[in-house]
Amino acid sequence: MTAIHSYDPKTGHGLKHDPLNAIVAPRPIGWISTVSAAGVRNLAPYSFFNAFNYRPPIIGFSSTGWKDSVRNIEETGQFVWNLATRPLAQAVNATSAMVAHEVDEFELAGLTAAPSVRVAAPRVAESPVAFECRLTQMIRLTDAEGAPVDAWLTLGEVVMVHIDQTLLIDGVYDTVAAEPILRAGGPADYFGIDPAGRFQMYRPT
Image (tube, helix red, strand yellow):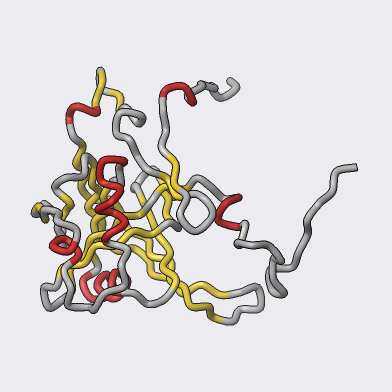
């Protein structure tokens, strides 16, 4: 019989590192750019990120703690998601630093802030894909008993999409060519993707 490691998260996992993030992995990264009502730019990566609806397109990320990104989005109702890629991995990591509110992470990471079309928050010019978003919901998460936890889920409708044309092959977006980086488990693990890992399945008709 297979040995199973079972635990109640409330009492601890009993391991060297929390396995939850390693199990729910790899995960896309929410590289979120915002600007405060006072005009201070912010850029930060979030590993709790995904897409949640087709039409209208809605994406979202969860912030552990009331961070500058969440504060700025609450003030302005706008943000931009930028694709985190392998060539930009070090810059993505640099923007994860805990710095003062007035610090501009674009400058900190040596990135170019490109103007957006529909929102005030800038895009990362070096990123090959960006979604301009307008806030739809900001939800403080709760536990099973309804008690609030220190985490906020921010959802936004994508109102403008920007894609590097070299990633469009015969009208189809080439996921592999974009070289996205994905967050995995442990304190520092990330993954990339390559064509060897691709397989296809069509839905039953």
